[in-house]
Length: 314
Image 1 (cartoon, rainbow, N blue to C red):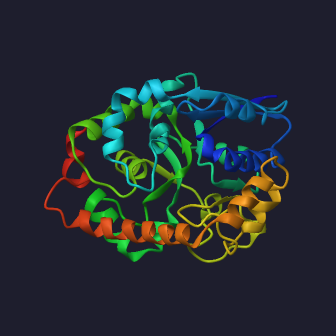
Image 2 (cartoon, helix red, strand yellow):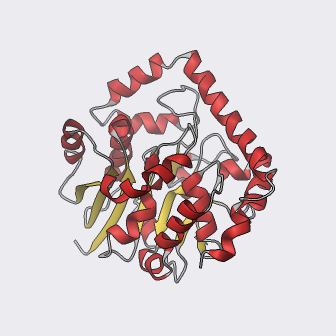
Image 3 (spheres, rainbow, N blue to C red):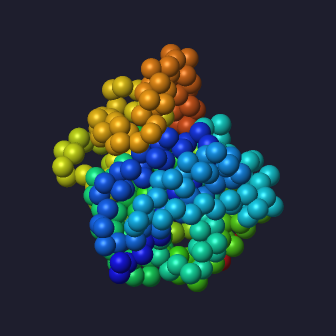
């Protein structure tokens, strides 16, 4: 095997079934001559779940678990203060990858609510030059007009350049050279910047003008944008609130279930779908509405925006 590709996920006990589906899709599209090093970032995952995750490995897909709790413990209060009800602290784990893994100059980060339809090695081969990340314009923001003003007035980023942080090709060497972690911690602890998508907003601010933009086919969100034929897609990202294991009418849900059937979690996921209540669906709608309301509230604030402090963090 000539190539080793480090791929990071973040997961907790509750998300193991979805992680299993994501990894199964990676397996099914993998190159047998490539070594895929999957590193699962977690915070105190239970022993039973740890054993389950380790069983996902194969001859050319190696699994490593990394408990990141000690790394973030000193920042836990600040992290929690900036979380919304619809996020957990796991969203911040990707910020620490460059420094936890100095042996890698380049790596992939993937959310667990994705499925692959192509070999992820093709994504990894993208030449980033000196840019900090390779990423895809966020479809939620692009197709939700209320967020256009939010990203411009709060972050100083045009909505056509605001990227999704759930599918990233990370230039770890350049991130270390630019002291990205130090800048992140400085913003987090020194300033009280409000946000609707904490990690994603931070990354868009810190990586502004240092992004290699990749095609939407590498981060297709089912409910946003024009339909793209499945055969033309590389990765589907079941982002936001409507997950195929909660809603039966999500576009491309058949792709998710195809891979789910190859795992030991199909029955569990099917049970989740069958038991998802109207009240839970209402909570999802409320969460989506709350994001839009918060975006309007934040841009109306007289100060405390990212755009106000960005020049002070170098």
